[in-house]
Length: 364
Image (cartoon, rainbow, N blue to C red; front, top):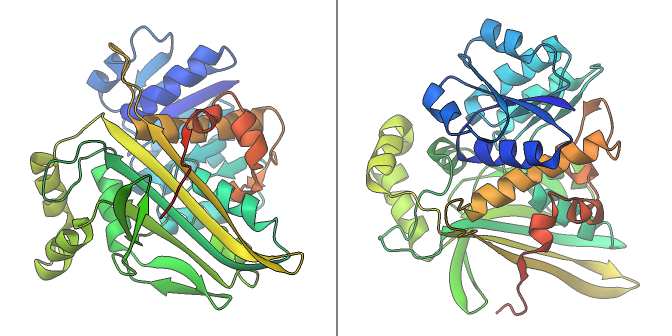
């Protein structure tokens, strides 16, 4: 399958390596940075320096490919999807941005190609898990989805290191969040809904952030009594982010906040991804709760280390593309994450990264 990958950052590099290494994909990687593309030397992929923020050059780079995999910053998702439709390519991305997803949904109407955004960890895998368990209930009550990409060794007051895009991080902290209450879709505020829990003997907090639900609100509206998504952090992070975003009003100057974080919060490859889903309801007349809890750790292999967020995000989108190529997903129109069957995802050669993770045995 001939694919063009947009973006040669940490996630893009991992996607390129996985797809090219499988032998079933002919990968061309496009980025505006020649330095970023140079890091792909030795993978056997083709590379092109293209201004990915300009419609004309981007369209020219997409023509002649079967599929587009977009690993660019979230604010370029609509542009990339629009050019993919113009070029007649199937489209996959990692966006957590709600507005971009709605725009892509509109682009997919009447299209002869497929559009599948939100193919990462959250949104992405977390929605596949939640929907899988939700289908097993006669009457669905509560669906709680919790995900965290955390430093394995937190050392600062935020108890946080940069493990992925600063743009995406601040975006999900600043926008309204979708949820379901009493069967109805509502919006809740980011950083609110603070809760605490322990998992594997470690204390965590979780709070509302935007985008992690994907399209599950629409899918489960009228079926679930309650549905929400919260980001997991170490205790104390939420309070400090509220100081920065609300008391210091940096939510109104997000570029300044992003620059501060890039300069002051170190990046780490030594991270852990936490996936925690609980679903409750009635089965055979009994009130039952099902729990899915996993920890995915970084790969510390010397010479080629991979962070946990690289592993999980790249696995998500590569599995989606692979299942599509195998004909296990619709071949045109808008594809929701919850249309992916969890057993098929975990059995996939890329999705198996989640299967090889450590299942958490006890939750307090």
